[in-house]
Amino acid sequence: MNSMCYRWFLIGFVLLLSACASTVPEDIRKETERVVHIGEARQSPATFRGSEVRWGGTIASVRNERDATLIEIVSRRLDSDGQPYEEDRSEGRFLARAAGFLDPALYSAGREVTVRGRLDGVREEAIGEFRYTFPLVAADHVYLWPKRPPPQPAYPYDPFWYYPWYPWGWPYYQPYYPPPHHH
Image (cartoon, rainbow, N blue to C red; front, side, top):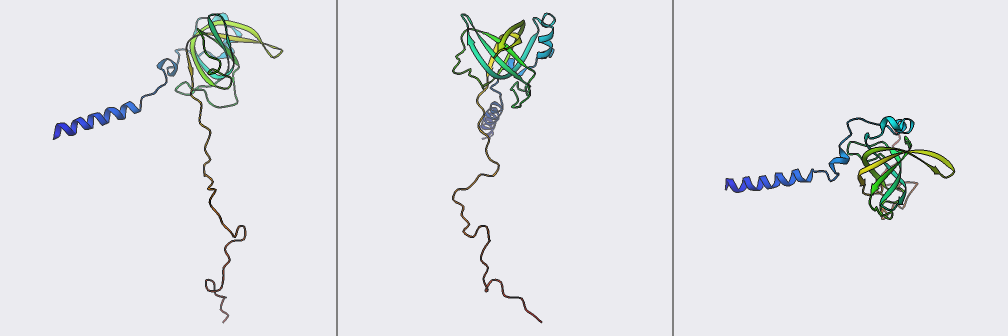
């Protein structure tokens, strides 16, 4: 009897621990040894060439080349798992070059992505008619984050709730509220 209880306890404990495991790859969760900011990489690309970075943000565009995919990303700060925060601040944009084909239907504008790789200089391209210097990351790992569910209201509205006396309140009649007594 004791060994049977012990087995069930052990199985339950292992299942509980496995439920706590993260599905985000370790290379995306783990921070780099030295943090390089996008502004630094834009201003002195030779200094930071070859540095390992973990950057992320929102995809602005995706272009497939002959042997690689070029992703233009609007940078965002990352949380402890490496997921970009939903915020309206950005250090700028960067390009990530991933080997092979990434489907633009999946890696579409507006999706969140985190990349890890080495800085490979800068590349000047146009955003509209503005010339912009993009830091270029040779991406070893590209992680497309699942779409976030829409926010739920704090207090859900019940469509079946009905109060016929709104906005005046309940009609209070005599048996419930007798008139005041005068002495």
